[in-house]
Image 1 (tube, rainbow, N blue to C red):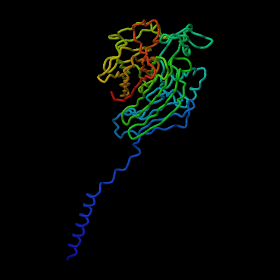
Image 2 (image 1 turned 45 degrees about the vertical axis):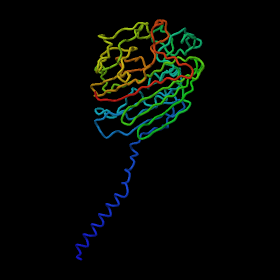
Image 3 (image 1 turned 135 degrees about the vertical axis):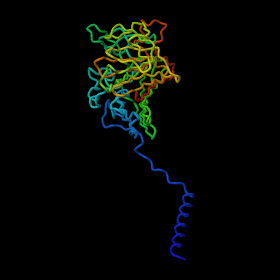
Length: 404
């Protein structure tokens, strides 16, 4: 047999052997890309006695795709959703909230005079507001720095932690009772599809300042290449009815810095009128906003211009999935953020946007301002939810980035 023929037989045998081997065994699994796994980790910086938690994911290789990349949560301060970062094609990686660095938060969240009742938690970051959002008025008790008021027909004393700047401004209760509370238990979880942190708090009767007893569970979740959002579950663990209002107070940064051309879209048909923009107490009257300067319901939004806003927008429109969807659009930055309220009990958006500031505080909330005020009368539903013993309710909001 010639040498060339022997070589040909050898090559044929090798090829046939390889073919049979490939048919007999499945191909090896592709190596796991650990870099694609989302992460949930505790930082070395503690605030409120507990480590800050960061949820993060790698950036998608598609430079045209906007993406939420990370979120910083502070379990030691009521699960404050402190900062969210994202990639915007025209901007790169940017902060989405007008929050100072965490080191400054650690300095300001100190329980001092400016931080009484956790007030700094609604001045910076994204404070979660429980068991009520916005304002509640009552009889001021200066010796106790409290107000005495009626909640669901019963007398309670709430911390008097806020008032306007005018000389005769009235002390009142503002933005709930957990801004300075640390979670009892914190747990982290992450997979290739999501990263999350859960905080649990047995708030009981909020230090004797509220009715019945409340168990809270707050879960913040970053979903792969999709959304960031969080839920607040409130359960009545007491023996009497529990009035519950839940809200959120984030400051959305305007990337271009050109506030006048920023467009706001809020799916509301009415706004609650107030006495003035110092007290911001509701008069009990509602104004239909169609064809007014406050009509932000049109598709694509309305430019903010020089309009001052500290208004409670109500009578919300909902999409086919029962969601109410608000948007902040910065055309000059080719940037848009969508605030999706998933809970049907979110009945209002409080919008705070001073013309001289480079942010819009857009606050989805269950209840309207001063929900038990006699000014509302007895026929208006002001958004507070009543939970019977053993009942629960969930507040849920998600954020999405988009290019307008």
